[in-house]
Amino acid sequence: MIEDLLTAIPLGFFLAFLIGPVFFVLLETSAVKGARAAFALDLGVVFADIVFILIAYFSTNQLLAKIKDDPALYIFGGALFVTYGIISLIKNKKSYLSQNDPTIVVIKKNNYIELFIKGFFLNFINIGVLGFWLGVLIVFGPQLDMETTRITFFFGTILGTYLFIDIFKILAAKKLNKKLTPYRIYKVKRIISIIIIVSGGVLLAKGIFPKQINGTIEDQIERRIPTI
Image (cartoon, rainbow, N blue to C red; front, side, top):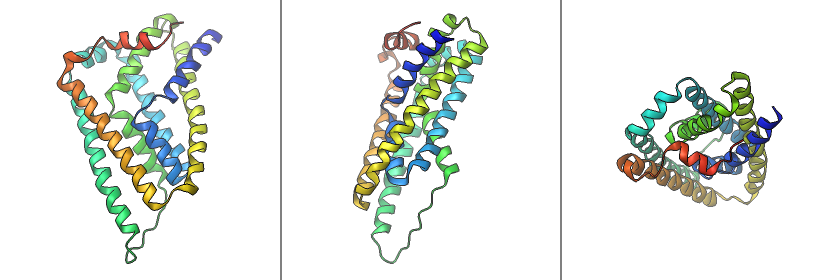
């Protein structure tokens, strides 16, 4: 167990600082809406990871083949990302204009369930995340003897470390709240929306040009992650 622990913790650190749409949305949520709101969103992200891990564990071979042979999954996820980013751009602009319109009263109140769902959605539509967990399971599963207890402990440690590091990221980002004017908040949200659109474009490219994706998922994971 100690050996599994020492291997899982660095993976949790790696995951916590993996740059992507969720990373920026988490920091933006903390800075704009507060730590509790960001934590609710982060719980949704982690729940999506748990779902992916369960899917990978119970049907690794079938799903791995599906990801390799069916670029439609990347196209679907990319299209959702692009759509979400465009909607966010439009929504954020309308929200900013309404804040500067004295005839419109905007009452802000955090909906933690909605934020949880948002975090889950942002993570779940990224098929690359499923590929990551599949790769981790393929690389480390045999070394864990595919024992349910060891695998549960291993992945639980990864997610626990990830969540622990995210708490510090959330608290650090929250300090920016006092420096954020409505215009700066609008700019931050605009940048986040553009990042989401670009991320969607990358997924679309992977789906449209599947032959340009170098190596298998397992190869990519092995290049990034040291073995036990």
